[in-house]
Image 1: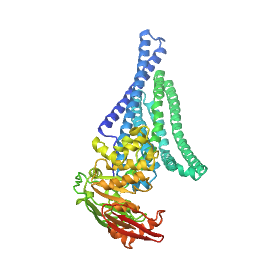
Image 2 (image 1 turned 60 degrees about the vertical axis):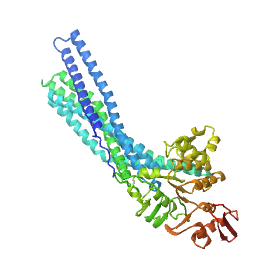
Image 3 (image 1 turned 45 degrees about the vertical axis):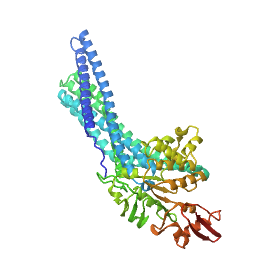
Image 4 (image 1 turned 90 degrees about the vertical axis):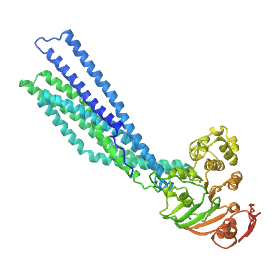
Length: 597
């Protein structure tokens, strides 16, 4: 499992040391303030009963300087604390993203996208708050308090022990609230995750909510979730309020204790009034650090819940494991070989070979494992058993970057990205030359598409390209897949629901592409450009052969396309291909002919 980054790395360790220094410096400023007040108080009530002008100026300048230094220290402390938290969140965010990109689309689809987003936003923010507002304040407040108590112990041991005892009782009471605070943090985070998941899902499926008239139902469901979240957050706020109440009560009790003990000592001649006033000043100046500590407890338990969720996410097993220093995939011919490839629940001991430059149609009923087969070649997942080889090289032994560079893929599962058309067109291979781009643009009729759009390449694409037509999206994804001239091309259901113009583009691509192609299709007319058919059913490779051989018989391939043809409104499909071969598909409602010229 990927390790959670430590806060004690070199840059952050230096920031932590600086925070400790700030704490002791603040303690020094607080002590100087108290000593000046003691000096002034003693001079006022002394026999002289007056302060000289120089003494008054010294005290005023001293108090102003101590206040200014303390204020400046609070500012730089907050800046460095935020630097510390942001640095930690930055490292953890990159680790989360690196884990995210190693997960297969299949495993991600099984999880709530809202919960995953919450890892990057809510959980990371909770950890950042702990580091910048919790850990940092704990260090500063602890060093300031210890420094003040140490000086107070030197000045007046009895008063110091009284204040320390009260602080110890307050710390114990806060510790007792730890378990309820963690439980409340878990509940509030769980409710927030549910709400985020629901909203994310409804954003993606808003058309379904509208079309089926379920707006009221979904609003009621969101209302119930919001009420549960509200209750959880209020329960958490109650415990946080109790922590703050403890701090405020501690401050008041400490003041009272110093006053009573100090008065008794003054009466007994064991302390001076100025010393008691100085001690009360020290306790008063400790109030801000103590108030900070009341939030530290809350941040700590919230971060523990977030850290547990992040660790769970990092424990998700990646379906693809890249070996250290794995060599590049070297593609010379484009020969693809499956050796008893098995994926639990999808494929069972599939063995097949796609010859270099061959166009292979992967066909079969829905759920047969066709898309999984293509995912294995693209190495979006690794087989549970068996292997996939390209030009004799096991993909499991090659680094992922070289595999993805060698393979172009177009599938509905790889949508366009939010941003400009220019960004999407060049996404796969940004450094491709202008000449190579223009050739692909011409092949996919991108120039015609850009003329249809008022801003051309600068046109902004909505999420998943939903502001474009299906044909426009398909042309863009095909051009993206072809960019960089990959020697292997994977096409998954690219000709489903296409307009005639986009269908012609697919035909041109298959006719001109020189590399090896695996295409998942249900279109009978597409078989005119196919060299070999692989028929899958229930995860097994049932039948392979040329279109002319398989479609002439009564095997599963012929039955599949006979069924497809019988469902068409067109009784006869005629397609031309370079090689001459005739075969018939006899349907119940007539004869469906594919004529190869």
